[in-house]
Amino acid sequence: MTRHVRRTLLLLVLTPLLYALVGADQAASAHTELVSASPKDGADLTKAPDHLTLTFDEPVDLADVRVLTMDGNRLPVSRTAGGAKDSVRVALAAPEGGELAVVWSVVDEEDGHASSGRLTFGVGAATTTTGGDEAASPVPAPSPSVRKGLVAARWAGYLALALFVGGLAFVTLLWPRGAHEPRARALLVLAWTVGLLATVAALGFQGAYTALGGMRDALRPATYAEVLATEPGVVLASRGLLWVLAAVVLGALMQGGAGTSRSPGWRVGALAVAFGLLRTTGMAGHNSEGSEPTWGAIADFVHLLGASVWIGGLAMLTVAVLPRRRAGELAAVVPGYSRLAAVSVTGIVAAGLVLAWQVVGSYDALLHSSYGHLLLIKTAVLAAVLLAAYASRQWVRTRLDLAVLLRGDAATVRPFGYSVAVETGLVLVVLVVTSLLVTADPGR
Image 1: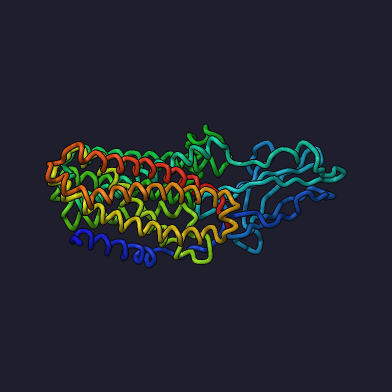
Image 2 (image 1 turned 90 degrees about the vertical axis):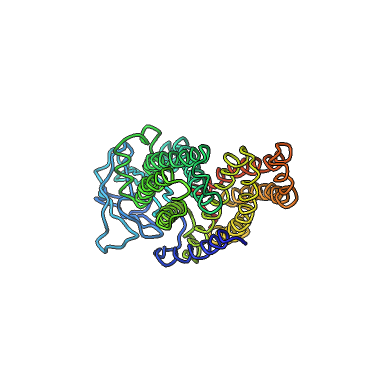
């Protein structure tokens, strides 16, 4: 086992422990839902109330709760007289036509998921009916186009994170000379650019998603201002700032090359930026939901770290190393990456099992919920990826020496390139399913 691989193993062990020490415990919860309303939904009232009390199943931030009249006017929301953090007081206006109806929405503080519904009351002589057009109309929900945009932004963010963090790890641990290779440099610059743009786009889509708005709302400056007042918005903004700091790390590598990649100061800076990017990405998921949120957060961090090292290394291998077909590089880089990938995959599988039980919670939820179905699809695609990875590893064990003797002969290296390409393509599918899982309602 090489010195670089031993250091990586130490990093995989120590990083989640450091994460547990510096990260605050988060309460276990599912998506925030309305527990009760006073007056109750559908109640017939003799006179119009001046306020409405909403109680949720977990503490909520006032900025995360929106209550609108049916014509779109936002109603003032404040804390109740008792100051309970799971309840809010909504000031009401006088109803028109003997009926009072409002639309509520709340954003989960952990993952930014939006829940919504409608409350309707009869006032005076009017009675609330259950068969009218008002009751028959669908409950307001986030726009499908906005949700798709949010999923696409998260997919791009996951891919950029993996390429950037994994690419830096590949160059630092296995291929310092790659800092001078134009294709490797282009891949890192592309990953940084996509990561920053995806974070900015995610802010707009998150704001439109939580406000139950449309695509146009994702471009409004007011939407950005509103989402930055919520916890998911703060997490996204923090990630954006970390991408800005990542430009400093990347710029130093571009200028200094292999010497910079070996510098202890640069490595500390790169590790800090990578740590922050991984953590803020994990904070937008379901890892804190369940009976052991701290272990869920640690497992999610290991999962993201392993996936980034694996996927980023695959991309570097496919785009920058294999096309050069240099015997010395193949002999030095490919075996080291093969061992590093084996460690990463082990961490991914172990952490994935912890996360699956933490979030899904039961076999019934795994088999009979949309979240469980997506998780099964992800597992099936990942199994196919592992088969391709096994083929690549077998080539390294049996054919690498021949490829080196033949000085990177194209016909000898081509099977390895095919298996790596298939592995990379399937990994992109895994990232798509992962993006869908983040916005899906968990099995619990």
